[in-house]
Length: 589
Image 1 (tube, rainbow, N blue to C red):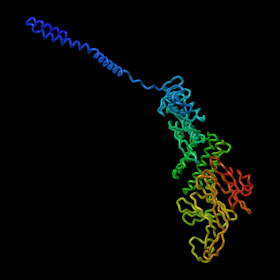
Image 2 (image 1 turned 90 degrees about the vertical axis):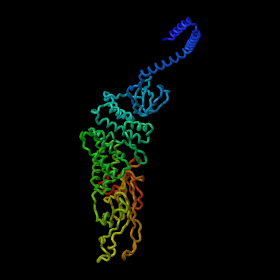
Image 3 (image 1 turned 120 degrees about the horizontal axis):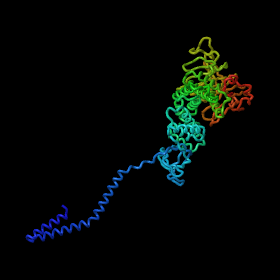
Image 4 (image 1 turned 60 degrees about the vertical axis):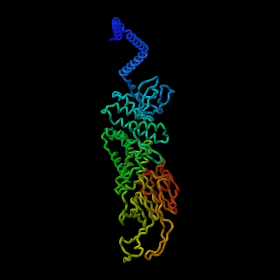
C-alpha cells in the first residue's frame, strides 16, 4: 500500500471516530506532522541521491563498455628490412632532430611496423629497441618462400663486393629462412664462409676500425663465430669454418670443395696453444681433409686452385715430418711427400698473394728437407738411446744421445781414434798401446729439445769445422757450427804424455735475428784458403715479410763478409758451393 493511500485511510478512520466521540483530534495532528516531516526530508535528500545514483550507473556502464571493448593489438609487422650502412641512427621520432636510441650496424635485421614520412617505424630485436630509421638506409626484404630467388641474386652480387660482407651474410640468413630445405645446396654456405673469411681478414688488419668490430658483433647474431689468436705479437682473427663444413656435406662442386679445404686447413689459423698430442691429431685431420675424393671432378679446377692445394699439402706434410721425428716414427715418407707437392706447383700460375703462399710453403719444406734424405752412414749404438754417426773420414764422430730430461737430445763431437778400444775391453789388453785404449775424446757437446738432423752433418775437408742442422720448432731450423780454435792442455791419461789438443766450440746460427717463427738456415759449402769461409743460405719470415739471403761468413768469427739476395751475385757460391746442396735445396727455386 502506498503512503498516500495509508494517509487517506487514517484520516477517514479518525473522522469516523470523531463523529462518534470526538477523541481522534490529537492522533490526526500527530500523523499529519509526521507526514509533513517525511515529505520535507525526501525533498532535501533527493538531489544527492540522484547524483550518487547517476555516478554508480555511469561506473557500471564504463565497466561494461571496457569489458566489451577488445585490447588494441601491437603494431602488426609489415615485413623486414636490413641495414645497408654502418652507424645508421635509430631515432625516437621520424625526423632528423629526433633523439638517437642506438647506432645500427650494416646487416642488422629490423622488423618494420609502419612508415611516417620518409622514415620507417622499426623494432630491433637484438637491441630490444624501437624507433624510426630513414627508409633510404634500409633494404626491404621478404622472408616468404616465393622471394628466395631474388635474395639469392643479391647474395651472388654481394659475395664479390669487398666491404659488404656483413650485409651479404644477412642476405644469406634471409635466403636460408625463405628457401625450402629441398632447395638449399652448398652455394649459400660457400658464400657465407667466403664473406666471413674476408671479414676476418679486414678485422685482423692494422687499419681495422670500430665499424669492422661492430660488424663482427653484428654477424654473431646470425651464428657466425670467430676465433682470436695471437701471431707475431698481434691479435689475429679467424673464421671458425662452420659454413665450409656444411658445404662439404652438401655435395659441392669442385670449386666449392677446394675453397672449403683451403679455408679449413689454414696454417695461420691453427691454435698455437694446442697441446702436442692435440696438434698431431688436428694435423692428421687436416691431411685427411686435403686428401678427400673429388666426386664432382678435380680436373675442372683451374691451375691456380690446384697450385694452392699443392702448396697447402706441402706445408702440412712438412709439419707432419717434424711431428713424426719427435714421436720416434719414420719421417722420411712425410718429408718426401712435402717435397713432391712443392715440386708439382706450376710457378707460372700465381697471383701476388700466391707468391707469398709459395714462399711460406718453401720455408716450411726447407726446414725439414733433411728428413727426406737417406741416412748416409749410421754408426754403432753404444748405449740405449745413444747413436753414433761418422762425420766423414776426418777423425771425427758425431754422437747423439738422450739427455737428462724427457725429450732432450744431446749432441757430442768426438775425436775418433783410428784403433779405438772396443766396448768392454779392459786396461792392459795385450798388444794395445795406452793411446789406443784411451778411446774417443769428447771435443764439444750441446743439448737441445729439438730434432737433430744428423743427415745434414757436413765436415770441412781440413777436419777443423762441421755444420749440423737442428730444428727446435716446426718451421724453424738452425745451423750449429762446430769449430776448432786455440788449444787446450790435456793431462796424462794412463801414461800418456801431456800435450796440446785444439779446443772446440759450438755456435748457433738462427734463420733471422728475431723471435723464432718461420725460417731456416742451411750449410751451402766451404771456401778453402788462408782465410777459410763458410757459405750459408737463410730464408725467414719476419714481421710479415719474407727475406732470402745468401751469405759468405768468415769461419773464425762467423761474421758476414758478403751477402746477396741471389747466389749468382757472389763469386764464392759459383766456385765453392756444395754440389749436394745445389741439387737438394729449395732456396734455389
